[in-house]
Every structure is written in C-alpha cells, then in structure tokens.
Length: 108
Image (tube, rainbow, N blue to C red; front, side, top):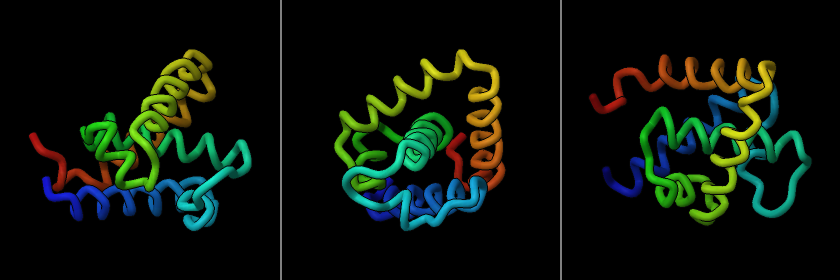
C-alpha cells in the first residue's frame, strides 16, 4: 500500500474515533503530551488501525505521526486493558465501527 494511502486511512481512523467518542479530532492529532483520556483514545485508535486495517506498527506510527515503538506500547497497553470487561466493550465497539467504515477497503 502506498504511503499516502496509509496516512489517509489513519487520518480517517482518527476522525472516526473522534466522532465515535465525541472528542475533537485535533486533540487526537496533537503532538506531545495530552490528557490521559485523549492518550487512551489515541492508543485505541492505533490498536484498531493495526488490528482491523492490518497496518504494520511502522505504518500506524507514520499515519499517526508517532514512532513505531509508541504504537507497540499502545497495542500492548490496549491488549492488557482488555481484561477489564467495560474497556473490552469499548474497544470491541471501536473495532466494529472501523470494520463497517472500512469494509470495502479491507484486503481479503
């Protein structure tokens, strides 16, 4: 996949998660430190981009303007937190919405 396509889809993922959770997308795009809630939502978005869109961690990092190791940390954190049923429901909802939104773009 072309680099600009990855960035485009990650940008769409950010907009989708912002709309789903009612936060400004510019907050999810902000570089540097943000509130814990925004950081956690960004981690979920990165995780979903990796799992649902099947992007490499390097591609997700590029698309989110972050380092690959930041994406790795985000994915591990989300996986660990999925042991909590409420958090798992939130992530599952984000995954279902992303699958529906990107259905025709997902590679089979």
